[in-house]
Picture 1: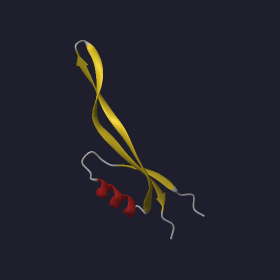
Picture 2: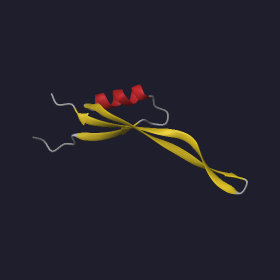
Picture 3: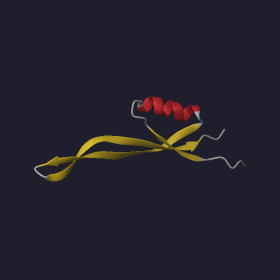
Picture 4: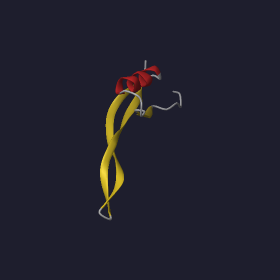
Length: 68
């Protein structure tokens, strides 16, 4: 049994579609097992106080090695 990575995380790039990320994952020999989304916030100063507003999201796939 090889000691290579069995799991890997793939992040969808800023200018990359989800399909492009999944194709990249498949090309590396991995299959997605879980999708996670994390919100990204930015600080905005309003009336002297700092508030946080949504600025986007980060999509990460957990992938498992495809065994043949």
